[in-house]
Length: 104
Length: 236
Image (cartoon, rainbow over all chains, first blue to last red; front, top):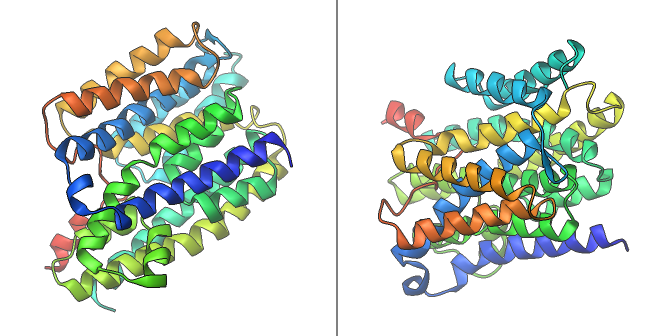
């Protein structure tokens, strides 16, 4: 099996492990306000970081290309309360259009 | 249908449909159909799946993808604790409940006050999302395969939009906006300094330290992508 498969299966096991942890560990241990808060802020930080990495990272350099148009267009769609799938399609359309017009 | 069943079903449809974008992006990132499907069947926590393929698409190592996906799944432990307190599942049911413990099923259950309704909401949303998420993953992966060149269709832009769409419902007050801004800046600064994929882990460290040592509401960031509460208020 390839290295990719091993990491996928390890990721699946870890994901299930965290889900099950909440059911198995005594409430006192997890019902710690600091842990709950860290789990939440971690989620926000990771999603923000993933958004930026996918927008500007090109290997180990920062590049501003058609993906910036996707970020702006998706932000506008979200402000207009578009559903998730519409936001994704708007993002794809903006990047494709920007590229068609010769930007990145 | 009871109100909880109705909310659970509508959330299942709305969330299940996202999987089209996950499937298409997974294939565009370079995973094969079986790998894309395995993540939906076994990992089954959308944010983590998007994180895994997002890191791979950016040229990160599978190990970095594992790290980002695993950290994004930490909040499910908090959800598991909440569902355990509400439903008190035992034996095999507990093992099944754990697999469908995600943002959406937890939020649907938490939006109900009657214990029987909490139980119905959790299982309808959890199993409903699971079934539809996996069906639409396959549809998305086949679509991604058929599209060919991902860049010509702007699929890299679709990934950007998907992550912003997952982040958006969590930016409800000044604190999450500040966390997101600081983590975005930390990411940009880290990109030229460390291997691809690792800037995300740097941001995770910043966010975790902020949450653990900073002051603020305990449930920051623990919101579903599809908000069930408005529907609940209508049905009360």
